[in-house]
Image (cartoon, rainbow, N blue to C red; front, side, top):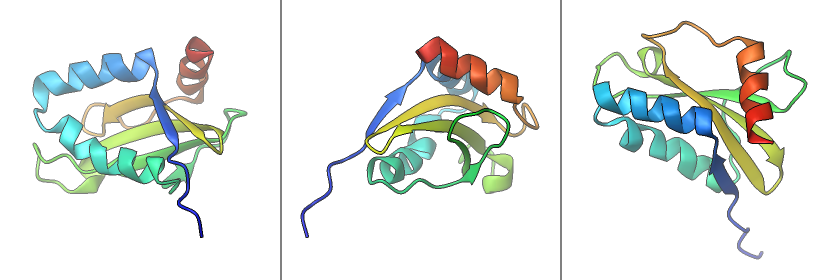
Length: 114
């Protein structure tokens, strides 16, 4: 069996902006989300699908090492499967900052990317 091509994971401006904001408070945020990015690059599309966007969008949890509450109090990463070879990281937030993200906000992030 041939080695699969790694999936291209791109980052949207809204994701980057939020990541920078989180990094001011949580020094480990980039290390914490790296395992998720590694899984996506390997083609392992983890997380739960989000309905109501009209796109293939999933939400996955990532642990926050800066606050010891496990995954439930960690980060949420919203990403879109654009194609079998391309994943777009749309949004990230700390569960302690916001409970959920609206479908409209996800659609807005997708439209900013395209």
